[in-house]
Image (cartoon, rainbow, N blue to C red; front, side, top):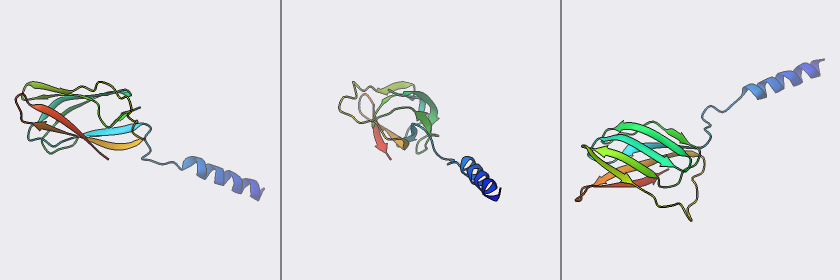
Length: 122
């Protein structure tokens, strides 16, 4: 009887223990490295689409989950009323990101016209 009770308590402890920060998929946030406020930020990957709203200069968004993502993605932002985007052609030869947390660092290159850039931070 004691063995059965001990076994039940052990099973209950194992079942009730879980990792709190485990996230399925790839979590991506946006960090704004530009001197501009980035508005209406949308990121599309083969694993979904998420909207990040507005991210002020020097700030970062909350993480959003994608079922699959790569080191670059389709990104659409509005800067001072101008729509800027990064449009991947394909992901041939690229490896999907492993599950975990990543940051897409966005910046604006002040050319004529302005150009949006993306860098992946792990």
